[in-house]
Image (cartoon, rainbow, N blue to C red; front, side, top):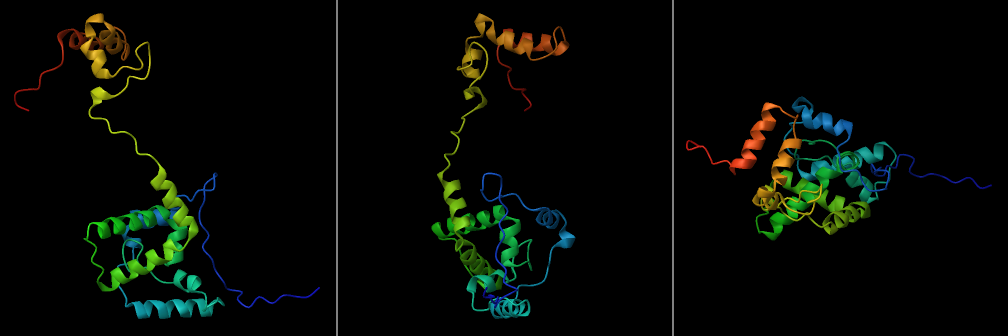
Length: 219
């Protein structure tokens, strides 16, 4: 049997965190959460020039025996030059907080569409490089497509427009229940929502019989 030679024993790839269904987990890892909640763990160093960032990444890949000709692997070692994860590698961010990655992509795209994105400075250079790196992964693009395909919930104009959802009038709104309170159903609902014969129950019964509360003159 011919023995194969591994020319790059130190090669590293992104290990995405996935849930039971195979989708990327968007919640931050324990390490990311500690950084988010503890400012003392955040790197406050000023942003470096892109040239220094790329040189440091090449050195890191070379020292661990990675493939310096692989753009993905080298960019994975780029250090972030912005935000609460400043100093962490591009690969680290994909592995630890995909939710933040999606937020960054969405925010920049919205600013570009509105003509408000102004990429200047070392931090912006780092951000653009990271977005280029993140979008090159099919897993990230699949998640973005999935999120954009979900239909947003229909907005509710007010609490009165909310469907009751239970009982003989489950399909009615709370406003409909209140407007037809002469039939006693509104009083019944208010009465069963608390302890029988309690002061609160009596107060709710009075509110049901007297009509909607009027705003206090001082409010």
